[in-house]
Image 1 (cartoon, rainbow, N blue to C red):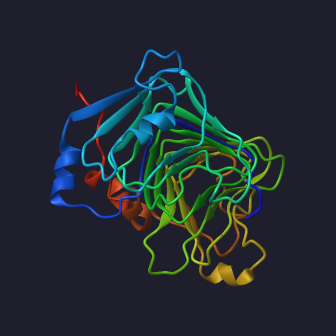
Image 2: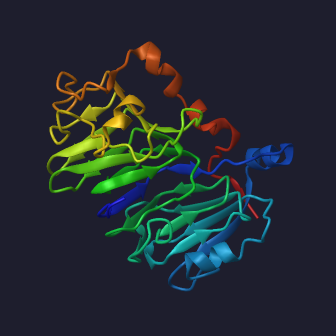
Image 3: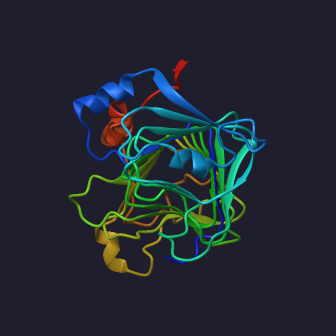
Length: 299
C-alpha cells in the first residue's frame, strides 16, 4: 500500500482482540472480576515509568487478567504485546490526557506504534497517535471498537480482521482523493470484513469509503451519517476492474449529504435491514467470548 498518511485513534472504550483459541480455563479467566494491577506513571510514583516495561513485567504464558493503569502523560514509545501475554488491558484515565505516540517509519507491518500479537487484549481511554506511514494493531483477527475517534489519510483502516466499529467517528484528513478503508479479505471462505454501525463519517475534503486491498474485500456501513466529504461514487477498485466482481461493498439506511446511493459505483450494494442484520451485532467478532468490563477488585 501507499503511505497511509497520519492515523490517530482515540480509544474511548475500545476493545480489540486477536481471539485465536480459547479453553474452559480461559473462559473462567475472562469471567473473573479480579485483576492484577500494574501502574505506569511518568512521575515515578507508579510501578513503572514506561508502558513497555509494564508489559514486559507480565509473565510469559500469562494466565491471569492484568490491568495496566496508565496515568496521564505523553508516552513516546513503540509498544509490543507478545503473543504469549494474553489477558492484558491497557487503560488510561481519559483519552485526552493519556497519549501514546510514535514516529517510526518503514514497512507497514514493522512500524506500528502499538503491535497487539496476543489474544484477549483490551484498550481503554487512550489516544494512540501515528504519523506518516505508521499503523496500529496488527494481526487483529477479531476486533471491536466502540465510541472511538479514528482519524487518518489513506487506507488508515486496513487489514484482514473481522471488525465492528460501533458509534465511532471516522475522520479523513486527506486533502483530496483519500481512502478510509483497505480491507484485505483474500478469499470468499474468510469470515472477515469491516462493519460500521451508527458511525459518523467526515473529512476535510473528498474521500472514498474504501478500496479492495484483497480481491474479496468486504465493508458495510449501516445507520451511519456521511458528510459531503464522501465522494458520490463511494468506492474505488484500486485500478483492478476484476475486483469489482468479488469485492463486497454496501450500505444500509445511512444518511447525510454523502450517503446518497444514486451515484455509487454500480458494483456496490444498497442493502436492506434484513440483509445487513446478521452483521449488526457483536456476534460477528465473537465478543461475548472475550469481552470484559473494568475490574472491581485488584490484587
